[in-house]
Image (tube, rainbow, N blue to C red):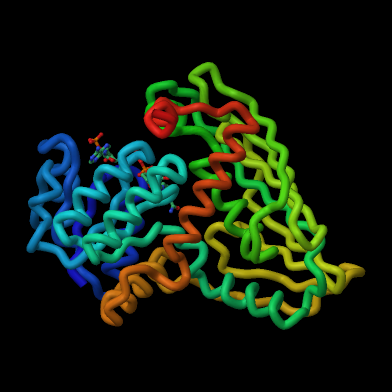
Length: 326
Ligand SMILES: NC(=O)c1ccc[n+]([C@@H]2O[C@H](COP(=O)([O-])OP(=O)(O)OC[C@H]3O[C@@H](n4cnc5c(N)ncnc54)[C@H](OP(=O)(O)O)[C@@H]3O)[C@@H](O)[C@H]2O)c1
């Protein structure tokens, strides 16, 4: 498939490596500044670069949007209205209202849209789902997940600025919610959230406690000011699954209630892990789908609404929230 990418920052080379690694082409890049976009294109042997996403139309079969969170909606809607299928980085929009708007445009334009929640496409996650469905863990009782790293404080950067919808929850805490939803197969019935708000006004760290219809609970933490590791455990009445580096998982262990190893899966990435979502989007387009069964639109809306709820509990406010209220 011929891809264009919008945004050429930290994550873009990972996408390019995965796409090319499974035989796709990356033929165009768009950014806000022509010199920066051209320099990126040259470095990564991409033939075309520019500042206007309309230049991608006719050149590409699909676009990967990897701009800061605050611009996902507008960039994606411009592409969808031009008929370009979109794989949009997480979180798909800043809040459920933005995600709903994107979905509405995709639906009325009849163009494919998918949130780039690559974790859901990993083979290890398919096995985890199957273990849970087979009852190997019994009734799910608790999920514990943490994702934290220490980033230098820079109030103007994507991670720390409220104008970019920065903070730990939307950037990496989102993955702890994804693994919890996979375990419980449902949204929480109630939750509490407490954040450490940075001087810039985003969550430097956040703790979320959530309770599920089955009676189970989740304890989730994320931080951009502390190393919390990146591990998840799902504990059920019959056993526990430990997933190291769960957002990019390549392996997972099933343990008995007394802690003995029962099974282990090891599924090394073919490239870097992004290839699974890229291949799945190509499959969906071949099949004439507008949304992906693994990351359906309703799932993205529900995830965004859950993060809205967590933000409201923890007092995390972005400038774009005013627009949602007006
Ligand atoms: N899946 C993962 O594992 C993973 C990992 C990291 C990040 N991400 C996600 O990927 C996205 C980007 O993160 P990143 O770390 O790559 O960010 P980044 O390093 O800050 O790069 C953002 C890029 O977007 C460009 N840009 C900013 N506003 C734009 C606009 N309105 N239109 C077009 N281009 C624009 C910036 O270039 P100019 O400033 O030159 O315009 C820059 O090239 C975020 O959604 C993040 O959550 C995902």
